[in-house]
Length: 286
Image 1 (cartoon, rainbow, N blue to C red):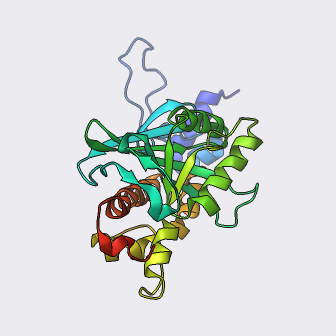
Image 2: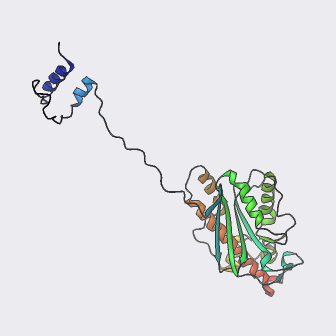
Image 3: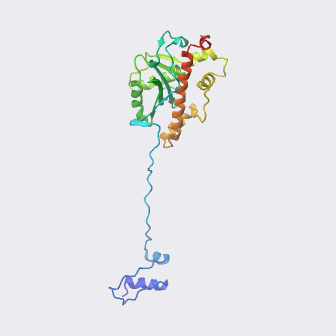
């Protein structure tokens, strides 16, 4: 009765593969067997063993702006020489009867998930500017998860003092109400309540409405500061950049959002300095 080894030898001979003699002593040095042809593998049901390389793991960390200060929250911080701090000024140009020192000023601007406002809109970035140790300081809070919002609001609140003076561009109508809503939804008292607020859009409109094509911030900074933005991410594209990141997209557009927000803060400081400086041409229409 033939054994399996005999059958294998017969099949090898039919395929033209050399077969060792049956009488070869078992103690003889083992010969390196030649690979089986595919037709023999199919007959014998022998699998072809192949080494599969393990999947490559991503080693590069997500390149987010700034550093992590809490779960889902990034902080970007920088100090620059421009804009200069305004001198002590009277805020009559903003319809406020008060003298204001630069140390009290808190410039702020938000990047949000939409322009409609309401409870469905949230701020995913809050930019804050002030003058610290003779230089303009920018601090930007960016949430990278929805759960990071409460930490962002707490951090922003800690930067405000009872005598802080807010400075914004259209912030009275948009940014401040939106943030107050977010504080309320997070069951937190709003630190914005009761603070003096200089909204630069209104003195700009009173002075140059009709003389310029519009009174948007980009127009004001171009006319008053000779600032022309290059490769700037339009504010309307910021929501898509953040939502795309949340859905697993690249973090690169968030750097452009941060750059856009940074320029907004610097322009706020430059325009405020124009109004705070004693220049008759700025105040004649007030």
